[in-house]
Image 1 (tube, rainbow, N blue to C red):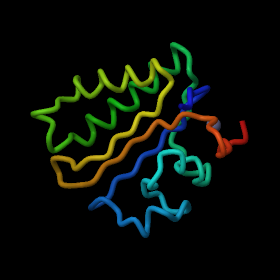
Image 2 (image 1 turned 180 degrees about the horizontal axis):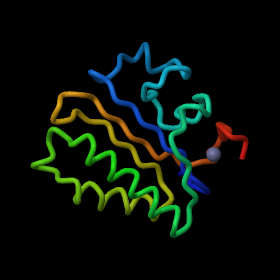
Image 3 (image 1 turned 180 degrees about the vertical axis):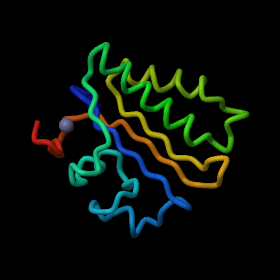
Amino acid sequence: MNVAEHWHAFEYVGHERPADSLRVDPTNPTPPLEIGHWLRKPARHVAETFTNDDAGRKEASEWMRQGGEEHAPADGDSFPLDARMTYVNDDLQRGADVIWGYYTKKQRYHSRALVACPREGISCPYGR
Ligand SMILES: [Zn+2]
């Protein structure tokens, strides 16, 4: 398992969950097939970077919540944002990846990812 020194944050919003043929191309903003492959995307796709310390984890958590508020999940009644955030904060505390990919109430596909970096075999998009 990769324990984050920092997380790179990525976001994707589209009409539907992208086809695998689009997802394999790192120049596309689409969610990749493997979590680590987010880091293969050009740095311009990185929305934010958060350090793994108290302040950074708090900011990272807020960034995820903001996405959940802006793009309310279609199943938000049965799996509310507060419950999702419990998992997010637990993952952050462990230095793990945080990945969301779901359909929204407005029938868009929304993905937000906090990808732990560095990780074995994949270099940091910023060379850190
Ligand atoms: Zn990095």
